[in-house]
Length: 460
Ligand code: HEC
Ligand code: HEC
Image 1 (cartoon, rainbow, N blue to C red):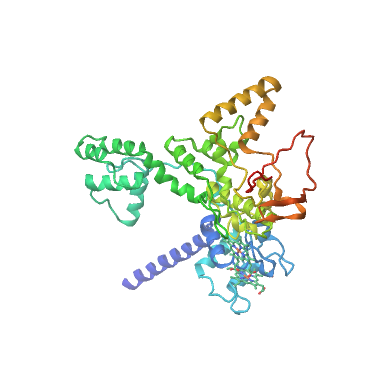
Image 2: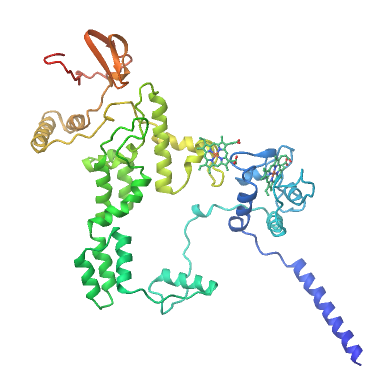
């Protein structure tokens, strides 16, 4: 009787096992997600040989159409829907070390192989890099007595997984020190500190933060990050590293932060302030963002070479600063990890590849600031031209007096007779000397003005 009962049990167990196996076989595997499961394996284990730089065996896993295209062998390595029939899976499962991928590296784990195979079985779908996907609203985790805002609720949710809980709240002195260092980079002024320490109402901390944000030091501290991204420096960067007078731009950035300038305006003015209608001096100064590029005025350097270097620097800075992407890599090869192709670098370059850079002594063109009396005269000249010749002439002359543009630099001279190019910056001419400026388009300008220096008393 007992024996029979056992047997029955075996039978039931056996049926359960068979059913379980059938369930596993016939229920579809959960959908493999390209971005979170597949891409990390490809990036870590394959892309150094099969990516934007090298495509060994004619196989690249950077873009879907490349990954599905025929390789050197003439056949595609990935056949969507057929993992076991795909060369890629055969190669990662191979036992011959000459054949097995990753080549000359440890094999993939069983789990990684399974992920890749299932992904191909499910159609080898690609995904958009997470950074380029539109934001989706996600439901908020439930409320919690500790949470003071929505972000806190996500933090608590994270703790739950790690079995953590909150430490007791820091003392007022500690909070004061931390938030002061964070917002203004130094201890709070006594008056602000004392009023916070004395206050006992619920809004005391909030008030402290507002007071700190209202201090000029807030902008001074927080702009350091942007100024680093904008590669702000008071020198030119190459060779003798001569000085550069560009602090007005630094002040502009600090003011923008302290005045809470909207981010879009902050960017537009730096990218193209000079192209805005009736651009103000401040908007011109903002464009120094793009003039922070290093300039090389060492004798004998090639102007076009360093003009191009400056343009590329502007491209890279734009992408790093505004888009947070290492676009600079794409100068030489498709991005190894991000979906950006080599030629896209040069397409983007077209936006900025229209500047003129020459080795000029003071990094002309500069924006001239007129002292109070002269600025009054400047305004008189402007309004006189406006009355006599119209608005557009007035603008043209105003711009000329502010920037000295358009200018032809004498460093473009040749055919020196008793004359020479001085420090590769400007033409120097001795008594009765001469040199030539060739291929200059005057566009029917009736006047040409010279700017020259002489060190001889009464000399020319
Ligand atoms: C260290 C370099 C290196 C790494 C890393 C590497 N491979 Fe390869 N792979 C090669 C070379 C070299 C070839 C061409 C010679 C050959 O076919 O064996 C190749 C060829 C291939 C081919 C055959 C292409 C054809 O001709 O059809 C496939 C598929 C492949 N690799 C997949 C992968 C996968 C998947 C990974 C990552 C799991 C990977 N490889 C990692 C070097 C590498
Ligand atoms: C000035 C040109 C240049 C820039 C800029 C550049 N690379 Fe490269 N990179 C190369 C060259 C050339 C190779 C190929 C070397 C070879 O074939 O062995 C390469 C190879 C690679 C490889 C292939 C794997 C390897 O180790 O050989 C990776 C990955 C890579 N670069 C990543 C990057 C990243 C990331 C950036 C930007 C942060 C970048 N590169 C910027 C020129 C550049």
